[in-house]
Image (cartoon, rainbow, N blue to C red; front, side, top):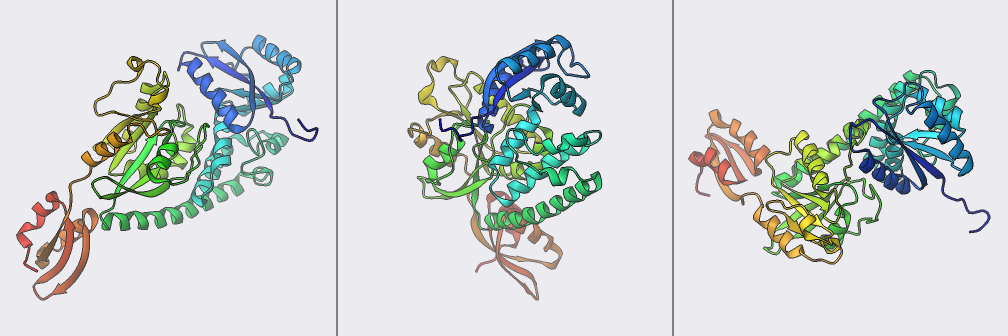
Length: 415
């Protein structure tokens, strides 16, 4: 190593097991998050307690042990596998002599690294400021060290050292900017719908191989790394199916257990874009012992976002790495693939074709003036190609499916 080369920060991961969740699985996830953020998880500490200690989260004996290990093992950073209060952070930093961050700050930091699009950057900053705003009281000079988790990314010192009113104004500004970006995206979404474009969204737990699958299917060149949250901004690419129909494939941000609600709220519009897709591919790492849980985490969030009723195809990725097939999830309609080698891609494309929405067909209509309200439904759920008011009513050409046709068939005319 060159003398001027900066070594990764050495982190000690601390878990408080109160029985609320599987602490061991969550701690393993925290290790991956730490590596993804650019730090080295050097050692871990776990303590079982019925509830967090108000002043320091962990007990006084464990605090002393942590302080001793920080000194002996050249630890630069303590990362707690839960949210900490400002008081807890201040007391722990004073006792251990190193910087202390919590799980939420770490995830926000990773998102700040990964955001590339304007929308992604706005959403990350909004989530960071919402998280920090209630924590400003009593922080004093500590604010200058809250610019980021592992590095110095984030809203920055100048924003955080100002008063609450300035930060609230910034939050308001970010919301307005996001509305503009979302409005532009909605225009694109409406155009796709009007053109009859079918959307297929890749959703699932982070690091399940969604970006690798996107590249395998479309040669999209999406960043595909063995890191959590490698993809943050949605990517859309055209995918031509064997039947000849072209669909729009969308890659989305990965999910994770206990994703901070600040991020869920900030990225809700992006996640809703996936939830409103015509078909969803719930991708999981079939070689992981947590595969079934990962699928359930994704399904739960999709239900919360209103995706119920849309076809969801479970995709068991990394099947080439599964040592014992009997341990993998057995789910109806699941497709086993390897996005890396291309194994099972044919079956996946066939499953997408089987779940395509009902085909549309053109109709010529003459709606009486009393029935022109049906035109709004056609614009919303079908595709109106042309329309013209004539003495008898509203004449229009539209693409409709069988269900819409049932509503307007009485007004069909011969071209």
